[in-house]
Length: 251
Ligand code: NDP
Ligand code: 8X3
Image (tube, rainbow, N blue to C red; front, side, top):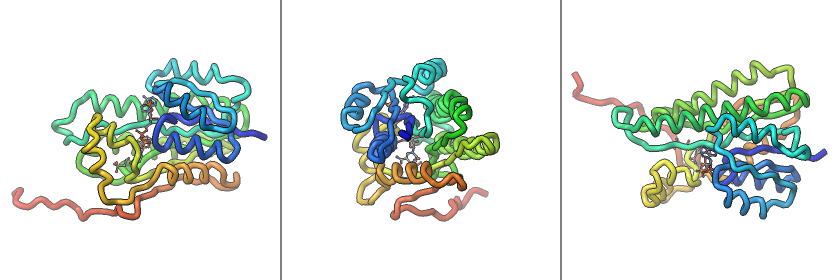
């Protein structure tokens, strides 16, 4: 039977690659994001039925309405990929704009909560479902300027585990995929449109590609039901850890 994946943030990067991957494997897709023209372009590339929704995940009522208004042929949703998200800014916590912090909390935490809460009832009623959340290595590994962005992704990690605790026995699986350095529009968004600063992030390294993340999402979502993949952490081959930061001369 045809399965359906609902992907948030399908207009770019991981979300777009994930929609294409599920489509290539014969799935139907529900693709969403704020940029309608990007959704139209993606839909034209997909080979299986796809339903697109212009949706801002921060808008709680709009998320509920989008889920309530799904065409019958696209329900129930089998897999929700909570991918929509962003980092804004890399300033230290004593300098950063509170608006930037609010934006990350509203999108990465509250938007993900709204989408999950809206779709879980139909998964439970259907006795089948999988929520794949896109976390980040920033949820586990601190770095300067990661402040609230990393904390939102730590929320995603813990929320994923707590969802499992609630849903075990209802045949709803949950996975947190935690990528590291990956080339998408992520840095352009983080640096508020500064393309030079964004491209410097990927200068002379071979980062993770959107298709690598799509591969992990698809793999996790299609394991036999006797297992649940709790989390997958993926770093670029060129990325590792720094030593602890010891600042001299403070006493
Ligand atoms: P992109 O900027 O390329 O894509 C982000 C997607 O999120 C876009 O489709 C955008 O769509 C969507 N989005 C942002 N805000 C909203 C909103 N309010 N409502 C709906 N959709 C929204 O970045 P990535 O593909 O890299 O990011 C995808 C996810 O992966 C994010 O959660 C990010 O934190 C995470 N991540 C990224 C890493 C990286 O290095 N690239 C590494 C680890 C995790 P639109 O603007 O059209 O609404
Ligand atoms: C994105 C990866 O390391 O820039 O989540 O925070 S990182």
